Length: 371
Image (cartoon, rainbow, N blue to C red; front, side):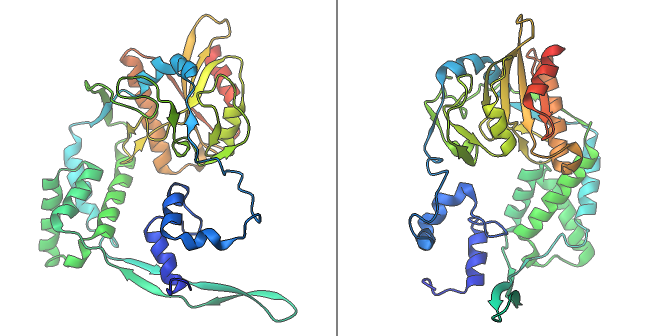
């Protein structure tokens, strides 16, 4: 009302800018920018009506330097830059896969969005939900042809010339491709379809190789390798809890993304020397899923006899077991397993473990240290 704009259009506008999710929830990483651009939403509830348990969540989190010194060797090893190389005989398979993908129904088109309005009404005796018709939109986001090719190539690593040749062949078959279909929607569909193909067909047809480039600054360190004073809480979690974590923990506050992560942070395990949440996207392991991958926790632990320190990296999944994970998540975990195997071949041993909701991190550490 204050902006004199239809509510359906406003919902679409907020979604297209990435401020809200499909159910109207505010995206945590965009919260500050959202309120800055739309300050009307700040005053929606009177003061004192809501207690914000995360009111200090956006304050910087201090890195405990003494703890980092114990994690330094492990951190420098797992942040080494590695490249992913596919087997040479995949070239022909990639062209064939792209040939099929471009001819799938629904690959080319425009985005269609539908909105609906639901209203709770009362007839004096009972409450009921009334649904009204909404508005349909067709969103066109055309791209210059060269940018269309570059975008697909950047996200799939398919050479531009191969993409162009397949597009040219398709245009010859169809008598041309409408300019309006050379857009972001079509590019995303091609990239996603190729990612699905790659997950299914390249599970054992790639390898990792360490780059000779020196590691620049990271989420925990400056360019010269010294630890930072603070880290943004958003890089280690979207939620926070009151209290002080164990002295063995890398940070001075409890910031997490799931109840299982919070439980890990609060677990003071005897075998653990030091541990910490890995800042988001800090390791960036390249994967066959068209996405980089970064695990969640790192631990330096000692064996039960106290004679040797071990390094453990843990991926935390707040689900019951591996069977409920999406294909993309399974592929990324398999890539991480192969990455850490290569790291061991290169002279640094790290035990990579996946934690599900039905297993405590203490059990994982006890299993590893008992070997």
